[in-house]
Length: 298
Image (cartoon, rainbow, N blue to C red):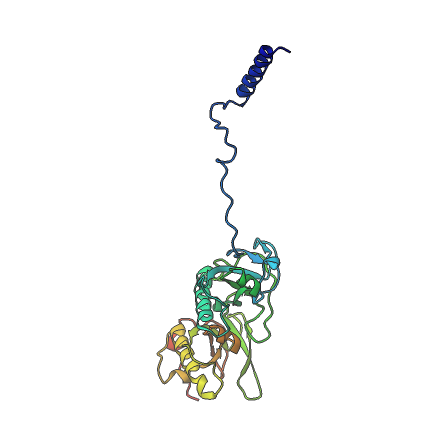
């Protein structure tokens, strides 16, 4: 082929290629500048408002995290996820101020989540942390988990339930603690509280929660006195009677503090019950006043 013809063919090919690569309206020809940048990789953080099929565990690893909709049968519901300071080197130890602070935040959020103090129902609140490998990878969260229980007495077991606990205690609920029948032991003290319909004969009733100050767990008789005094004040407000020296002659009181381990973790909520050691009633004593809870003369 002659040189002049070769140059003509080359020019023609170049023109075709340039025409084929020309940008059309609205297209700038850059294939990368309109894509959103991928999110930076970060440590795993669980979600709030979801449930877990398995039982509560003190620490949670990414490979064991399997959230489900709360309409699915489950045993744990996460009501809040908080965070420790990012610069903290090690997970907080049980009994440390940081862990007690996390429990206090979980306590407040759980109460807002269910619509009343969660201790007014057959519920248990616990705080889960990242595993040590998760902590080393940068996780600093803590998870606030609620579970439904069969009872708040010593023989409690976790219930597999369906449906969220959100607003579960805003009104009347089967979860609520109410009237009770007592079972006494050899020392005549109350050993067990058993749920009862308030319209049936019963001798005890849940009256509310007393928040104990930050002090060691009670181990001696003298240590228990503030708990009884606190619950008597709760009882007086519930029934509508004077909180005075005569109150102990109106009713006994049953106190149910959290266990020693939960106390160290920051739980200071004491469940309080009135106790009629000499009679039974067939109605709630809420707001009953002095006529409903008279001073006993014997």
